[in-house]
Image (cartoon, rainbow, N blue to C red; front, side, top):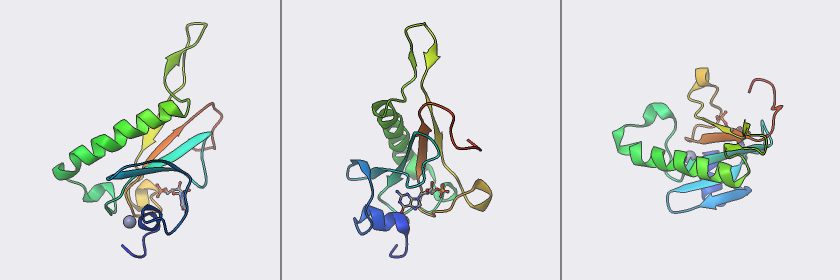
Length: 123
Ligand code: 5GP
Ligand code: ZN
């Protein structure tokens, strides 16, 4: 999709702060983070929204979530027990979908949002 922002990032035509890349997926930091950690996991294939996926995309979506959680851990957001025995850490995995879902970029992406609170209001 020549006019798609994330296709341009995938193609390297627009720079991004890349965290991870393989044949199918790329992950990069969000340009307007909502929290101390906020990055996007994006399939290289252009899919517009979660309303466009079907059972053939199940493996790809699974890979996106597994990668998002792994990278969240690498960014310091893993759920863990602190020295006082309290459960700390954690993150959100979020697919905004369509106008009512608050989607602004129509190339499928998984938001991974975490880090110490407070976060930007609304999250
Ligand atoms: P949506 O609202 O579509 O779920 O989220 C799109 C996200 O893409 C937003 O959080 C926005 O900050 C981010 N974004 C928009 N343009 C760019 C860009 O050029 N580079 C990066 N890294 N993120 C972007
Ligand atoms: Zn695209």
